[in-house]
Length: 294
Image (cartoon, rainbow, N blue to C red; front, side):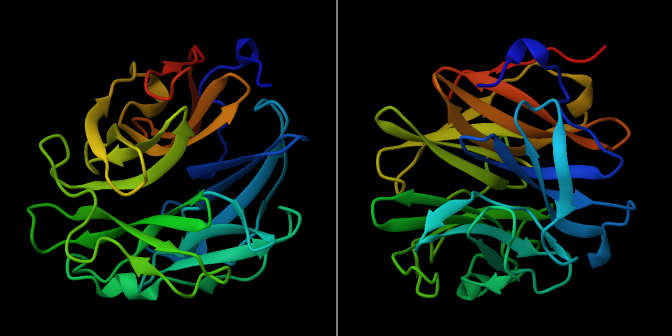
């Protein structure tokens, strides 16, 4: 169990920019997957990779290393599907940007990337033919994938839009796209440039989705569903501002630990440095944030 009294935000910072966290909890501790962004040049594939680090307490982090080739980013939820662990992520930043996954039997050693759901690049609302930010959710014998496409032509700003697909295929080859004609999440009053980075989890008798709303003025919003298909969008989640995410924050990941939900969050400060912080909640909707380092 995480000892909140021992922690302050940001919980982890490195010389590299830390982005897009994802946590997989085991009896031994916590596997943290993230996008490592180096050298402050967004356009070069060699500055991006999927990395993995292990921690038992979110104070000490061990064996930090890349687990993908260069040119990949945005790890999603690790799932156990078809008898092995699967980690979804994306190629980045070279076009075409596509979804992929790696497989593992031990959470440490991962296979080379395998691409999936390529057909999402051709959706009529995905005018950039760009597919990013995969999120996996298992419900019974169905695997749900929430993903992001982009439209830079129909709106004033570059805009990201969230789609939804499902499969029962253990090899992740055959998908049904639910959002063929329009995205699940588009633009809104509080997000004129759309949404990205979806996190979905179960709380009592409902599913909760928390996601990054907006791109330029990014913040968190949430929705509730009974079945993972139809969502009731509730609006912004209000979080007290801290220095480590003074510019913007997003890319949430949520997991349950005993009687609490925990959210690890990416924040960007006024120097455009990105680090990770931690929040906690009893119900998954109302969130408390750790105190900040002085």
